[in-house]
Each structure stands twice: as structure tokens, then as C-alpha cells.
Image 1 (cartoon, rainbow, N blue to C red):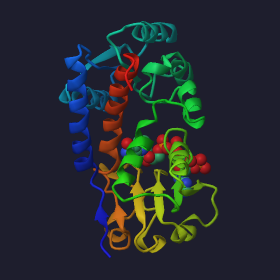
Image 2 (image 1 turned 120 degrees about the horizontal axis):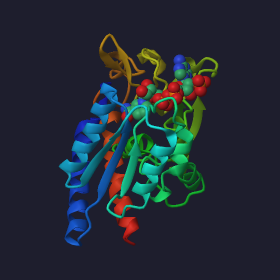
Image 3 (image 1 turned 60 degrees about the horizontal axis):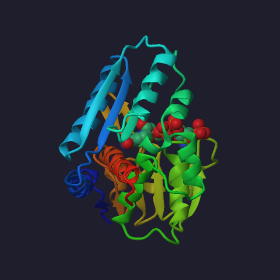
Image 4 (image 1 turned 90 degrees about the vertical axis):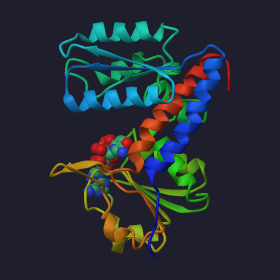
Length: 283
Ligand code: NAP
């Protein structure tokens, strides 16, 4: 069979149109959602990622600021800057671009961002809220993956393999799939005979960052394959899945690039809109 393409670019475009309408509604009430992105240093790739978030926010009518700090900034000064943004009523959501310079602890940064502005959903408070089922910001890549999966029908009752157990992708995806009543197996680099096991699964979410890991023969006929992997090989972005062959076996499949990537930034915008709504007492 030839898989249906889960085209993240198209799905993200439709989703952002809905967000733009939500931003417009807030603006009519005199509220302008604002996404503020903090970056320390001049790393080219990080700056371009920050600018693309900024542009995406402005494109749907949000305000967006970039706070660019010197790469030699002290940890104390950076934390003070975050505290000032926490107290600034004009700022709805705060993102701090990683990697951070080595003198700055990422853990301290995440503990300092006010949970109600932590639109990445990475602060310990928000991670705890997610695992205890309380209202919070779901981390953006996992949330984007769940949105892509909605286009394939319900995952309830399906057997799902999640490859990768990081705090930012694999583990939250496993939790969200479980919440949707899938039966989840979380795999990682110590999983024995990983690829041979994959043939049992209706859904595969691969977030290993290991190009060529999953080949067509590992996939069950008609399975849903979400490739989160994003590895630069010879100046080309590669996923974990051998896309060209796998699309002849899978039922649904994401391309790389153009699959999960566009959904991640979209969910940053989604969470910023939610932050503005919640801060103003709306659901
Ligand atoms: P990470 O923190 O490095 O975690 C990778 C996970 O994959 C680890 O749990 C590791 O196992 C497992 N793993 C690595 N190689 C493996 C292999 N050959 N077989 C089985 N498991 C393997 O990475 P991450 O931050 O979660 O990101 C994962 C990938 O997703 C990367 O390519 C990243 O660029 C991409 N990503 C994409 C987006 C997007 O928006 N498109 C967003 C975030 C991340 P151990 O725990 O045993 O080491």
C-alpha cells in the first residue's frame, strides 16, 4: 500500500488559521498575546530558529519580542531578566532558547520562568501538572504529534511504540498516548531487538535521532509512522525512518522535513494564546 502523507506544513497552516482567529478575538477585547523569546549569544542556527518563532507569532497577529543577551552574561543577570519578564503584564509566554552558554544552568532557568508563562511546558511545575492531569502547557513537539495523530483517527486501543525516552519528546508522547487509551511501549537504546519488535505495532513514534533506524521491513502493513528524528547528514535533514521505502508499507507517514517540525512551532503559538486567555480568566 502507499501511505497517506501526514503533511505537517498543511496541517500546521490550517491550525494557525484557527489560532489567528483566536488572537483576533482577544484583540477585540483589548488583549494582545505576546511571545517573548530570550537568547543568550549569537549562534547562527539558534538565532534563525528564534527569528522563525518570532515571525510565526507576528504572522498570526501576536506581538513578539526577541531579547538577545550577550553570550558572557552572568547566570544571575539572566535569571533577573526572566523575573522581570515574569512580572511584565504585556508578556504572555516566555521561551528561552537552548543551548545556553555553559555558565548558565538550564535547570535554574526552567525553575525561574513563571509556570503560567512557560509555554514550552518544560518547567518542573508544569511537567508535574501534566503527569497529574492538571491544566498546563503540554510540551510543544508532543502536542504537535498528538495533533497529527488526530488526522489518522482515534488511537484508542491501538498498540503504540515510542522510541526515545527524553523528557521533551519520548516520555510526554508516551503519557499523552496512554491518556488517549493506546497501549504504549517505550523503547530506547537499551531495548533488545527493537526493530524486530516494531512489526507488532499499529503506531510508531520515533524520536531517536538515528537516521536509517527504521526500514520498511520493520513496519506492520498499514501502521501509522511518525518520524520525529531530525539529524543533519551531509547538509540534509534526515529522520529515523527510511521514508521512500516505508511509505509503501505504512498507512500514514510523516515526511522529514515538513512533518513534525512545523507542528512544533504551531504549538508554541497555541500555548501562547492559551497563556493569554488563562491569564485573563478565560478558558
Ligand atoms: P535525546 O534527548 O538525545 O533522546 C534520544 C532518545 O532516543 C534517547 O532516549 C535514546 O536512548 C534513544 N535512542 C537514541 N538512539 C537510539 C537507537 N539507535 N535505538 C533506540 N533508541 C535510541 O533526543 P530528543 O531531544 O528526544 O530528540 C530526538 C530526536 O527528535 C532528535 O533527532 C531531535 O532533533 C528530534 N526533535 C525534533 C523536533 C521537531 O520539532 N521536529 C523537536 C524535538 C526533537 P537512551 O535514553 O537509552 O540514550
